[in-house]
Image (cartoon, rainbow, N blue to C red; front, side):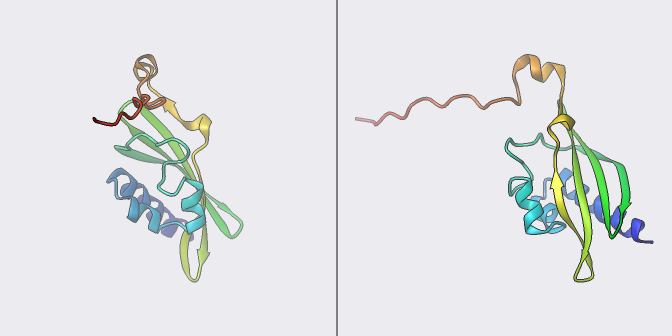
Amino acid sequence: MVGDDVRRLVEAQAQARVSDDLAAFASYMTPQAVLQLGGNGAGPRPLPRARRFSILDITRQGDAVGAVVRFRGIGASYELRTTWQRIDGAWKATDASVPAESVRVSWWRRLLGAGTEPPARPARRDLS
């Protein structure tokens, strides 16, 4: 069944993300889908390190299959939404996004300001 094939691919891609193997993670996607995530799966702001995942939904959408995976890390979680299509006989994620409303940061991270803007770097000084 098509759904089982795609489910195995979605699980393998999610496991690559949890293993922090971004090359393997990206190999399941078209170059355009990788670019939609900022080229490295990070988007405009780096995503928290994923420690585990759960597949929330896999739905047939005509010739495509949509998948929603929730990744959880220390202090934050987010959803990755992908659309999979058969390209040259192989399933690839052709569309990928992390909706801003799906990103959840733990109360203690919000309180401490961790995971927000990086600290400002001091101005460069030349040594004399």
